[in-house]
Image 1: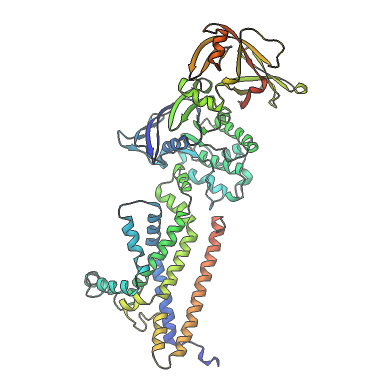
Image 2 (image 1 turned 90 degrees about the horizontal axis):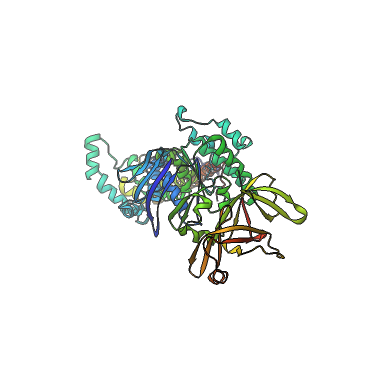
Length: 236
Length: 359
């Protein structure tokens, strides 16, 4: 009865793609998400409401919409896509790099929100204390703001990774469902449910998805505990 | 040393005034919410006044007319916060060294060992701030600021989060900083006894205005400050030396100039100096000594002047030091008192309040 258990190479490819795209997506938005979340939490600047709205748009739109917009802009025929291809030879459409871009766009607001909340919880007077002790703004950011918002940053990274794992609509619209290139776990599961005799594969991928999600959660919990000890403040 | 002239608006609050501090240690005194902390934050560079200048040792930290505004990290102005603001993610030692490490070696005025010894915080070094008591936190915060070698040390109500016992434990450390490190200090508090236990030089603030500065006992009797002094019961402030205690009759005798005063029993050692205060309304006047009365102090003096303020008279009497008495207009009229008259000032022993040990 266990004979159906080992996943096929195609299924493993989907898992591998999902993890690869998820990690790249997380890495891609880590720094921009950190900076944007901090800007939105700590600074007043003209056009802030607009930036805030744009960042959050993917969270409230049907995912197909950002996917389609990406296709229009970054596809071979799109203004940015054509420039990328002609100047750099880079093509995002129907490639796993494109899938990274699609899931990064969808995950970005989650990262920003987590960072913004975490930075707001950092006592501003700690930053002021650091200033009066002789630290410039960048040093204050690196030695006080970032370390103290680390739990929120880690949460944001986990949310981003999870969002990337679950990403379906924007990805399928922008980069399609290419086996071995853009067919991540959700796309593969959907595909298997559409073909006769694909139930077992779909089920195996569902189990793999659950295990992957649990692993990510566990890693983030572990990191959060480490951070707590590092920060010396029990997380509320 | 420090000179400033500022105009600052923030929300509905406005602050302006001038200050020129040339004493090594000065106090800034005023009721809560009068803008003392705001002024300190402006000196440290954490908020920017709309107009004015701040000079420290002749160097402009801020001069809006010339477009100078040094950022806080270039001002070398140390600020100790009321609630210490230690970095929770760093050990006590790393907290202490935070500013120190950013200094070029030549600019470091103190060593870690020196400050640790001065503030007696050696055993705390490996601990995290959350494992410290309030008093320990304030000592570490003070040490952290000192190690950044500031040219001016600003202390923003550093004791107000502590209970009375802890305050008395921290004050000696502040005196050691004052005497051993010779660092210019501006000590901000709404508690005059804390300030007076460090310095007699005080600037007085009320509602965003700097009203005056100088020796506290003199500043406080200026016309425009008297109202504040009256509301705090501080019209008469005297520095006295404890002479002797008589515990069996609950009495302490103190001396100023060559006069003696009988006060309630205190625990201060004989020979120590202390500040005492008396409300002007608690001073009674008599044209001759009165016998058969419980009032313990009858001091001969001469009237320097009389001022009518609203429905009452404020009489200034020279009893070796100037003393203010507040009486009704009727009382003055009934006795026919005028400038130059000899009078006796009557003080109940228990009407005097011990403010702070002066050392």
